[in-house]
Length: 327
Image 1 (tube, rainbow, N blue to C red):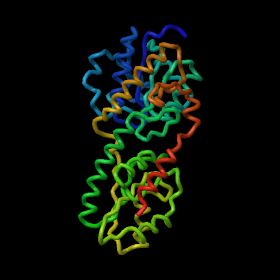
Image 2: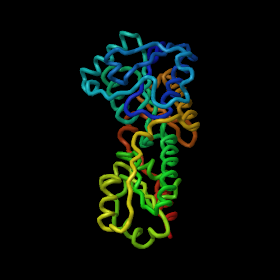
Image 3: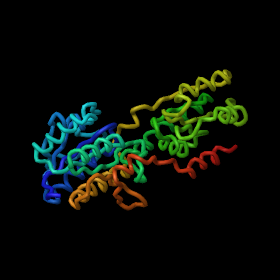
Image 4: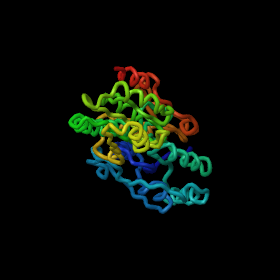
């Protein structure tokens, strides 16, 4: 490949705490390597529209602690078409941007891979999603913060559950993956974790309620991933309430609050590591890869692998929930 002189960076898909730290790292690593850095505002749609600005070191000062993304994020229907990707490639060439760093999830990487295949533009991806569901990395940017946010909320819900002897069904994010729900359930001492990867057995849940849950003596918390097969917390709670009208059942949906807030120290460090690694990969003539971290080491995972393969839940953690809920 020709020598890279200008590197663009964009954020795509759902925002995640730590994205700003990653942007900061990409910009400063690019400058450190003698390149110019350019921010693309509004994801792939912003790229198509030419919403691009050169970023210098001072432009990314004082953002490492901020949630969200200073570059904004948006989903682009137009970029999903060959014509839209052709426009995007043309904008990159017009601005003499030689390579692109995409911070996002599997959908973002699918688009990046098509851009590479159709227009031979070097792209490296950084895993930024609170769901932690990307194959090839132990952790994604934003996951640790989202878990901590949910744990803090559930701890507060437990206080009111105890005060009123209530059974709470708390819904956390995770449309297709139960990583947040599983870790939150363990961290908060919940009675159960209902996740998309495991078929929900309402019989088992009712067995717990009938045999182990005494509303006159204790409270209960059940963590439900939004993508749980029964339809989420409201659906599960409704079915349980119909079977047990004698119990005081409540539902709490944490929703988008899990995406917000200042990133944890872990996410700030991870984002910084991956941002620098992405630029280093481009300078080393890499393209069509995601930079990730496995066993505390930086790894390069081809886009086709991280898109094709599904990251599974840790079976040891699933078993841990079962062991710790034994009464």
